[in-house]
Image (cartoon, rainbow, N blue to C red; front, side):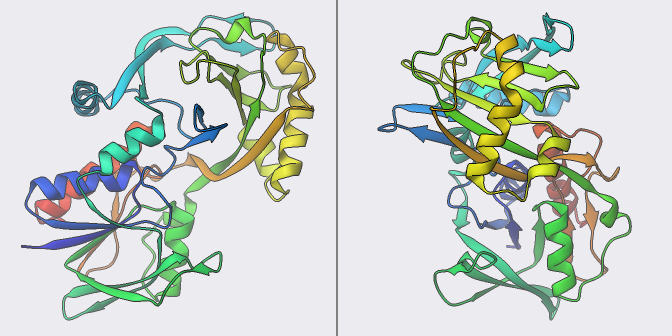
Amino acid sequence: MPNAIIVGAGITGLSAAQVLKEAGWQVEIIDKGQTPGGRFASRWFGDRTRRIDVGAQFISARDPVFAAAIEFWENRGWVRRWCTGIPVLTADALVGGEDGFPRWLGVGGMHAFGRALASSFVLRQPATITGLRADSGRWVVEAVPGDAVRGTATGPAIQVQADAVILTQPVPQVIHLLGSCGLPLPEGLAQVRYDPCVAVVIDVPNVNAPLLTQPGAVRIEDPASPLAWIASANGRGEVLHGDLLLLHARGDWSAAHQDHSSALLAEELLTAATPTLKRLGITRDLSRCLAEARLWRYSRCATPSTAPFVRVGNGPALMIAGDGFGDCPRVEGAWLSGRRAGIALRDGGG
């Protein structure tokens, strides 16, 4: 029975793992995070009674294969239908965003959806890949428990052998790994670029935000605003008392501020976003509210590779997949990339 190591427990890695598992492969997933799901992340407040999704905000489908997968997840109780359009705040007005395409949320939060997807796989996390080399037609993968990059390793390095490896980290991290291991860089990979995103969660008791009641989010397309997105946990049905607001900054604003501390990021974005918040009817002073910032350094692929995935070299199968590949930068594209890489490996094309 062949075996594969998949690096990354986000939607790409989990998609590839599912294809290989169904084909009879032994699959192990290694991820440096504390929990699976990648950008399917939620933040809890209080005594874990109030929650808001801080990463990927929803899933939607244009591709029929991904639509069928969502239907399966909905039948399993992992996702729930949310809305068929999101209002848009332009420089001039708030306009309806109804487009007829359903969006889904994770039941219990997007993090819970990620955990459900990963529940049938062998996970090794948190662990950081530190080495990758070919030996006698197989791969030897070296990993350190914990986050070796941040200096929080919790044990000695381990080595695992595999017939194939699929790398699903953001492309800049893949490039660094390949370079440190002396492996060739596939053509065009260095041109893949990502936009960062600063996310700020604000704990706002008794907030009055009538424009965020249904569906609980607004896309921002005002060039004068630093924001790209604002969501209300109450409006999305994630909390039953009080409220949590989520602000996602635009990519250019995030890039200009990404080296600042978390505390400073929260303060700066709240200050810069005040005019936008007032346009949405949120007029109270939020500076006294608890606010926490998080930087998604590789939030959205701005310049993807046109290939659905790539193979590295001519040795044992080593493939790269993720949201940096294909023509769909959404969650859907990441899932499709992982699935196509898994199919190619399953069918001997890896």
